[in-house]
Amino acid sequence: MSETINTLPIDYIPASQALTNDIILVTGAGDGIGRVAALTYASHGATVILLGRTLAKLEAVYDDIENTGGPQPAIYPMNFEGATEKEYTDLCNALQSEFGGLSGILHNASELGDRMPIRDYANDTWARIMQVNANAPFMLTKALLPLLHSSPTGHASVIFTGSSVARQGRAYWGAYAASKAAQENLMQTLADELDGTSVRSNSINPGATRTAMRASAYPAEDPQTIKTPEQIMPLYLYLMDKKSIAINGQLFNAQ
Image 1 (cartoon, one colour):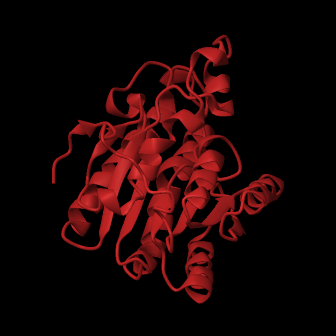
Image 2 (cartoon, rainbow, N blue to C red):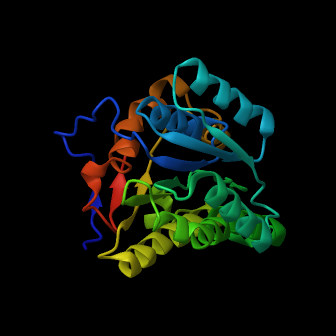
């Protein structure tokens, strides 16, 4: 298992129903990259579990999937800021009862936090960002590991979301950079522990992508100059596809 930075194989062509019978949970599924990933997975045959904190947004994605003929998705509202261990256990039990297993998790939900020097960074903001971006992926993955090992397709993929500032910290990125570094290290630790099993773990740095979070971080940037979530989906699809079954512990760049 290597830990080099990779990009999408140039010869990857997904089958139209590449994810048939897969059960995939997407966090932050109501908007941005999470929304588009959920639609993409559903369009390739997956049953998608839409997890997020805003019910109305999740319901809109649910309707979009149904209107385009995808398998009936499921909605599970959860706010990572205050989620307790019991809530993660309840989620696992609900998914076990409904689906019996899980084929994949996309850890997409993130909070940006403040763009300011460390000396000015509020302690409560730091704690909140670390809770959503680092602690929640740990607690969610830990709770759902038994379901991943019971995947209906016999293999499972966990995708974490990294960042360029996770790999090289930069001024004013504060808790976001630290939390993303923690998430990528969690991915590597998990991958090493799961090496040789049916569950694989990798991370994607999406790069500059046209989302509300990007607009918040770079308010003066022209959004027409950066890629849309749809344009980076091939990598998200590849790492859920069985064609990536041997890939574990890798850091990927979507651009």
